[in-house]
Image (cartoon, rainbow over all chains, first blue to last red; front, top):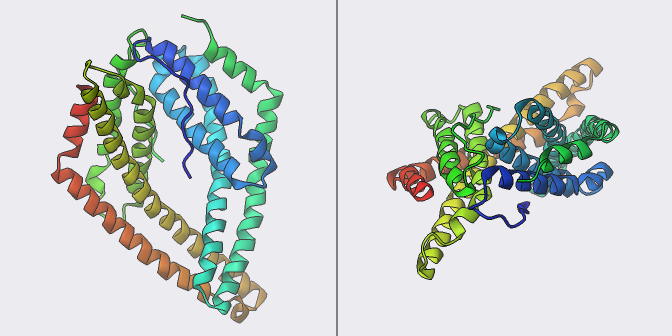
Length: 158
Length: 178
């Protein structure tokens, strides 16, 4: 499943700085739109979509870093990186569980028992992996990350 | 995972179009820094790093798609051709990312299966129930995954050699900076 990039229309003749702000803000909104679903945890697609969008956001931030004051930029970048990282641990386990569940059809009943045990083991690990992710979300909410990020990147208009 | 290479020469007050031609070649070069390692199937880390660099190139190409979609000349045919060529180049990048992704998935699965086997065996020894642990399913999956990984790596190498023979890098650079 591919997460489509949702960037508002930009003009290639605008300055990079103007476009960079527009793109970063756009990706940020898209990323945060998956947060509630990721917190809920029932549908694994939300974690996947939020993680992919956080990667797209980071790619944009890497490319456009020189458009912003470095110290404040690095602070915001580190937080996005932490989002990618904590979600990665959960997503990796989602992928493994899904893959092993699909493999069951190719195995004998006796072999399936081993894999079912492994799946249970990974599901327990997934519950553990969700804890740092949820803790990070709580911390970001408590510290006003969303508002501060947007204040920084919407910033001054050109 | 290797960090993204620092992008240099960016002009914040230059146009988005101008900066596409500064940034994209650097992203292409980052991908090719991993090329010396790819002919060794055991270089898992470097293959993984190449996948990540390809992903960064893909995302950056998608960011700058608008530069290659809008008319550089007034002819409608020329615009359509540019759109098509951009889509073709991007499709190659997405394909490479996907093949390398499959290889990486296999590497992760193999690691998890072997770790789990060792852990299970160790637990079983402690609990004195080794015969009840049963590893047939795990062994079978390890064998299947090794085969899939081998086939995926072969597919990647063939694709890479085809692209090299067709001067893909030179053509991509030329298209993106011209």
